[in-house]
Length: 199
Length: 315
Image (cartoon, rainbow over all chains, first blue to last red; front, side):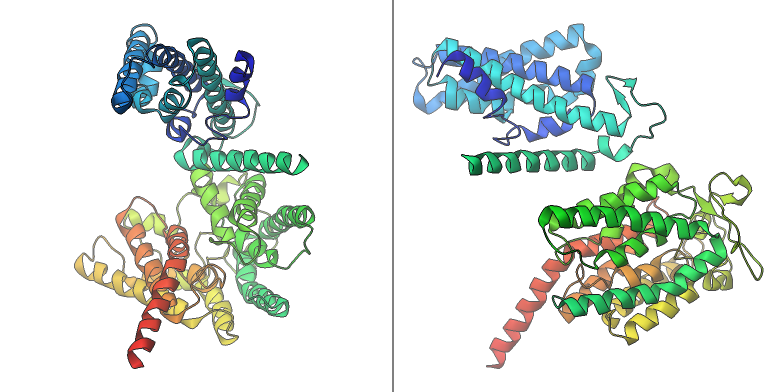
């Protein structure tokens, strides 16, 4: 598979959130506003790319039995970098993301790619895979945040969109997140079924 | 409830039983009630027809009851677009996504109301109308949120939290503010007894709900008479009677077994008392019935196991 295909797979065919159904917790928690969603998506993408490359580089040196702890150490290093960086330069975003920033360490998408892809492939394709998966995750969070912030606060990126629109507070609360997620997951499964039938 | 003739008979009986409530609402809150019912039927009916077309199924009468129940559990001066949004949400998420009439887990009208109550908490707790007095009441008026002199912010239950209790006879005849259909306990009882006599509503559910509600309410009042109102007063205030007769007895979302029905009714009655008296929420019937709906399949399962075990022992 070419690097470009690897990259595209992460966004569409193998989207970590909508198709593989991983990382639902951070997706639901950080999709209450577009600003948080962008921050979370970028942080996760950085960690994914970094950990994918390093895991791929050390894949022959790591004994099979202790591979998961090794991956976690690598991932935690990158998460710490992101955390310190955001804490220093983007304190608002840092506070808004809260616990979900350090929790990227145990984000199943990152571990999933390390285990399934990076530990079996070269550094270049792991890099593209990390970018693709990271962007796929970012797109998913952005889509959710677009719907939830738009309906729940009547704003996008904090700016009001439709004048006179009265927002439904429920959409930025957890129930609204679950409903949006459920409907989107249903839509993507339905699409997957339909494309299968056509083939 | 699979027989189509049975569904039809059931639906029309409920609609007939709701007529006293609609009449009382017209008398106390004016002609806007009719407009709310029309909006609810039009929007909900459209959604229903769209789903029927997509599924290539026949349109059934399932919506007749939901479309009438829904406006009856809303504040009478609620903006009409909210009625439309709520009924659309209730029908789509509460019913159609579960597979349509007869397959839903929750009462669709309550799902719609719950969505509005959480999504627009201010509108859902402030658009109450001061009921009209006299022989005609507000029968010839159209009162909406722009008639500021007719709008009041507190229902009897909200006022009770501040320590003012409405008169019991007002509660009984309906001369109090509240949701459209729940205002007159007399009208609710009239329709409700009709439902029970025609065997459309199960008497166990109704009796269990009201009984457990009165029992626990009585105990609370006995323990701290200053904080909690008497059980009889609470029974007539708010939407308990309406919920017990018309919402809890929905054959689709309530248990099938008799044992399950009793347990389900007690859950609703107890949860209503607890939510009303011990939380900041003013009214708890909606959440209590939704809670009962969640428990219904499990209660059926337990009741059937009990019966099976007894049968085995007898043998």
